[in-house]
Image (cartoon, rainbow, N blue to C red; front, side, top):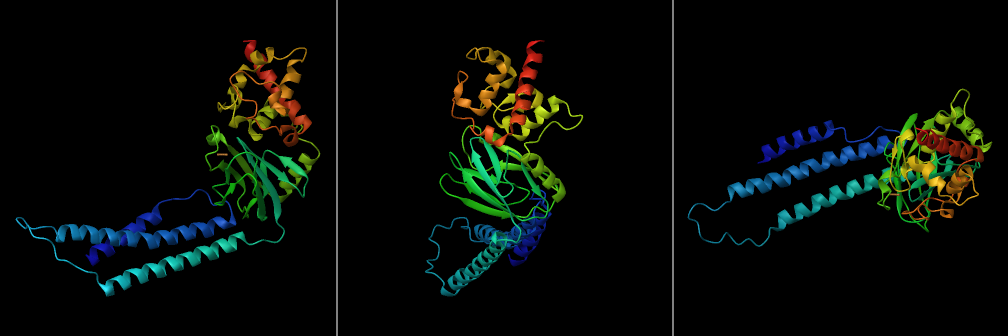
Length: 339
Ligand code: CUA
């Protein structure tokens, strides 16, 4: 039994360590957390194997012989065994708890030169506020290798702010300020996910975080502060509009073929021209679309609720960006209706 258990444990541990459990390591914290998981696996697998080996062995070795009718032996405990099976797990669990505590304490410690980012979750989008830089954005952009202190809030219901590549996850709770710390150490684009069932659009509450070199981040901050986001040289208004549509998270709730958006929380924007026809005149179509972005409850499309769409897009987007977005959406639906 011992030999079988030992061999099975070694095989089990080897298989577990071969499996690629984790996404890209995108933060300094990721390595520590992945090592913690590996240690948990190495400790848990032999315990599982030991319990199963004893259980299976007992079922086979102590089964009733053919014709055996009597009761089994009456056994009233075994003090030595009980001391062993209480003490060993107690030591293992305490050691693991202490190890987990040390890792968490290290990860959550305040770092020098932290960048503070205030994260707000609401049905169904994340928005980001950089108080020291005086910048608000629907896109999360972070400089590589600088510690970030996220202050997390929720406007309506529970959400959970999670960047799998960073490993850290924290609930966003209405009325409570939560926080987490992370040091992104890999440039690239990673997913921001909501990990708490928060309503019909929960699965679409996904945005992106861009981790960029420090100089690029500073340029981005400067551009946001100046209300920039003017289409780049040579960029078509169509591409600029599409980019704002996606980075502002519109695609989390709306369908729009041009942007590969298929969500159905809000009205289908392929039909925008037809809907805009029903607006209260004499407002023109452009004024109507702008109003729908900055003040969603002003005109509610039949079959939808007026309080689902966040009302803070005039905070999150610059006037130029809203212009670009309006032209983009109307331009698309005009080409479509002209077909
Ligand atoms: Cu927000 Cu799920």
